[in-house]
Image (cartoon, rainbow, N blue to C red; front, side):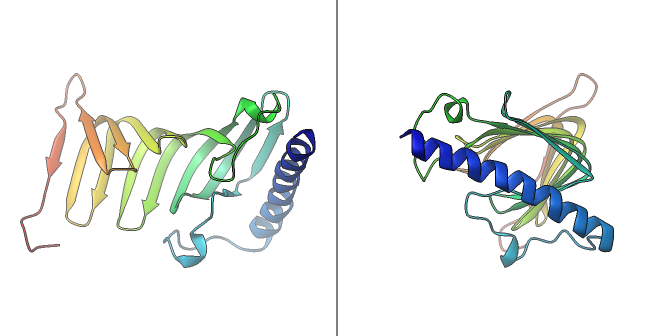
Length: 186
C-alpha cells in the first residue's frame, strides 16, 4: 500500500514538473489561438495546465497557477487569471484511492473565468469545481451559462454536471434571468 502511495506521489510530482517545463516551452514559442474543445482536449481524469507560473506545495497539497491560465479537465477548457488545485488529503495520509477516483479534491478559478464545454460556455469572475460531485459554483454579478440559444445569468450559478441541473440565484440589485429556446429550434 505504501508502495502504491509512493508511486502516485511521484507521478503527481513528475506531472507538475512536466507541466512547468512544457508550459515554458509553449509560452516561449507560441500563443494559444483558440480555446475550442476538440477530441485532443478530452482527458481521462487528468488535468492539463498551461500558465505563466505554476507552484506546487507538497506539504499543503496545493498547486497555484497564475497568469494566462488554461486548463483542460473533465471535457472542458477553462481559462482564467489564477487557478488553485487542492489534492485529496488521502494522498498524504496513505489512503488508497481507486482508479475511478480523482486525486484532485477541488479546483478554484479566479479572474475572468471562461469555461468552454462541448455545447456551450460559462463566464464568471470566480468558479469552484468539486470533482467528487462534479459541481461548478460560479460567483460574480454577471455570471452566465450559455448553451446554444439558451442561457441563465445571476450572481451565483450552481451547475451539476452529473445530471445537468442548474440553480441560479439573484443579486441584491438584479434578478436571476433565464432564456430557453422554443422546441425544434437550436
